[in-house]
Image (cartoon, rainbow, N blue to C red; front, top):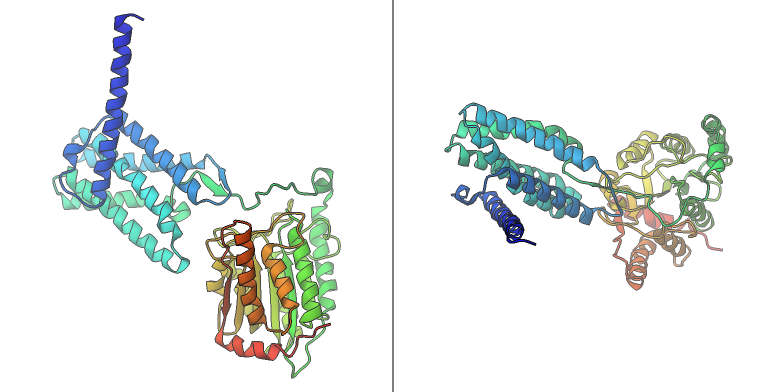
Length: 466
């Protein structure tokens, strides 16, 4: 190696080190701008290389931060689309910023300043705002947006000699161009949550799946639903009785089918629902004999059962078991069929339209605590397998139950009978099991309305033990 080649390599290394330090200074400048510190522009390094490095830094920060907060993350390239649209919008606004004063140098400086603060914004959103409880999230998100666009306004003031009108126009422009992204996805992410992810493969694959006659399956639902609902006997006037509806809605794993059946059996045996219970299940093993667990079938079933109930006296016991998502939707999946997932608003609407007053609702799914706020009232008991931001456990094919379902099954069989006591004991048992297996606590949630507390005392007289 000659002296000239060695000198060139040292020069390139020195340039890389210099660019790295400039990047750190620019990021420090961005951090100070976020807390509205004055006189930061003199520390700024403006170059095309720095813009490229800041974009890379922003993208990598988004990849890492959103991976950290996504359960069972699966990589998806659509984050690049978000990044590209955001960059185009920023370029467009930067063009107008430089067009009026006629200073072309402002465009690069504006882009550098925007992307100096962007990595910190994605970190704050991902690690702080997205973790807020549901009841505080909306206000927290509004405060975050107000702070973000205040920082943009402050940046424009810095490079436009405190031109407040221009600062306001550019800030509004940034908001308008970003509005579609804010509405549809809130923030940049390269990950989505695969709540079907499992080490197990579906039992029914290949030829068995192709054998399913989708059209016939849809037409069969009327008769299957009629057969199940026809077996339900009317309630006895003057006596509080329980009607059971089980809903196992994800066909990718057999545990939901098994759990719905087991909870129906224990309800029949111990809660007196033997002639007043039915299940809906999504599974190839039951598709010819049991109605599908679909949103439509649930609505029709509740409407029919309400006509068998004495609505002022009788109680509906609704047990839903499936995968749940961070968006607080219950997975409704039957492989080849295109079915609608169920939201808490849907369940509430079906119950309200059916006129069912007294409700015991159990939801065995990840993030199911997010259903409580929309479903709760004074006449309801709602018990969920997890908090709104937590996962639950036990969703594997060989299991007869999820952890939540197994504990509920065992507790219902215990004497003395009390749903309130049984469910409170179930929370503690689930916690102990998760601790013993070194799992994060799912934090099951129990809500009981004041009027339901009195109703539960009446229901204690209904329970019958073998």
